Image 1 (cartoon, rainbow, N blue to C red):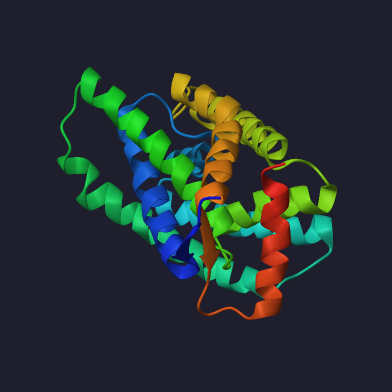
Image 2 (image 1 turned 45 degrees about the vertical axis):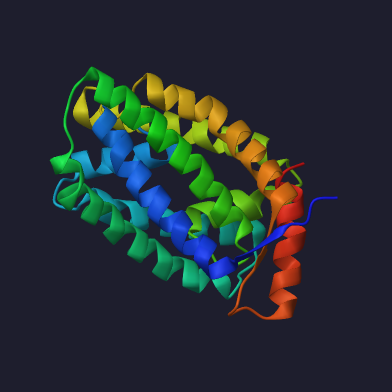
Length: 233
C-alpha cells in the first residue's frame, strides 16, 4: 500500500486561496464566462459598480454563511474565521485583477489557455480547501456543511448550488443590465462538471495525501475528518 504524504493544513489553505483568487480573475480574463459561483458577485459588481468585484465576493460569501446557519440552525466557531478569510480572499481577487490581469496578452488562443488553466486551478483549489481541515472560505464551508446536514452527496449538492447561482446571475443580468455579462459557454461547463471534477480530485488527493493542521485542536480535526469523508461519496 502506497504511503500517503503529509500536507500541512494551513499550507493547503493558503495554496487554495491563492489558486482560487487567481483562477477567478483569470476566468474573467478568458471571456468565455466565469464559474457560476463567481458569476453572482461579478454581476453584482457590474450592477452596483461602486463596489469592486472582490468586495462583492466576500459580501456574497458571508451571506452564504448566514443562510447556512439559518438552514442548519448550527453555528461553529470556524465560521467566524471564514468571515475574515472571505475578506482576505476578496482583496486577493482585487489585487490579481488590478496588478496581474491587466498585464496579460489578449487573443483567442490566449483566452482558451486562460480558461483551461483557471478551471484546473479552481478545481484543485476547491479540493484543497475542502481537505485542509481548517476553517475555510464561506463558500466552501457552505458547500461542505450543507450536504452533510442534509445527507446529500457533495458532487450532487455542488452541481445544484452551481446551477442555482447561474439562475440568480441570469435574473440579475436580465433585470438590471438587459444583457448577459460574465456568462458564456465556460459558465455552463463550470456549472455542469465542477462538482464531478472536484470530487475526482478529492479521490486522488485522498489516495496520496493526508492533511494535518498545526493550529487546530484534535476534536475539531476529528469532526473535519468525518465531514470530508462524506464529500467524496
